[in-house]
Image 1 (cartoon, rainbow, N blue to C red):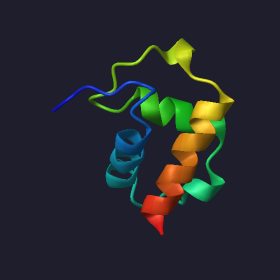
Image 2 (cartoon, rainbow, N blue to C red):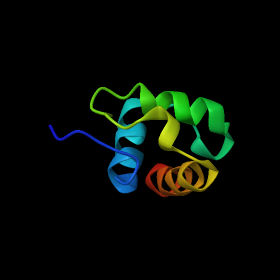
Image 3 (cartoon, helix red, strand yellow):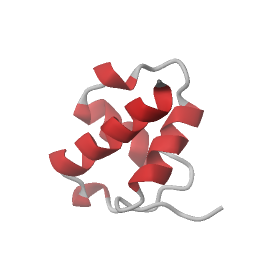
Image 4 (cartoon, rainbow, N blue to C red):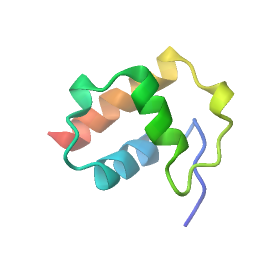
Length: 67
């Protein structure tokens, strides 16, 4: 399994969808989203390297997976 970094937005969204099937990503807060990403088993990115733009992009991709 490859490790994920903040640039792997599509893969992160799929991992979130697979790991949290009961969460509607439309309603997740950015702090909660950040925490869930950083705690993914194969996530190896620097927690301090994210920003609102990155989190919003991942959230939008997760919403697409969720639909």
